Length: 145
Image (spheres, rainbow, N blue to C red):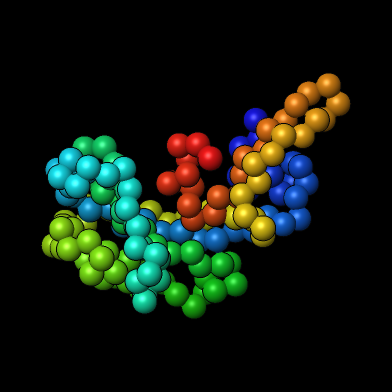
């Protein structure tokens, strides 16, 4: 199984791969997942952009909603992105208003022009299943595409 993320660009090779920046803000919100009975929720129609929540272990909820290309990286700071995420989440999911911020994560996510690559390929005597290019949706889609 080829789940190499950024490495797929060189391994396969695949010229349609590129990277996007993704940001998560982590908040302490014990009971949120049980109260709302959800694995994740998103607001794809917010005028400020996509925002979503993903409950984690131990009462932590990951808040997300950025996808910044490498070309745009120099024009926006993590602090600005995190403030925007918090604002959109509080508007879309009022139950999380005032939650204590307990951390954040910023990283590059492997994306792909044309979307996720999920396909089987015969390479010599071996069958390779490709599964990469999830971009900023890896946290949600990691459970299986």
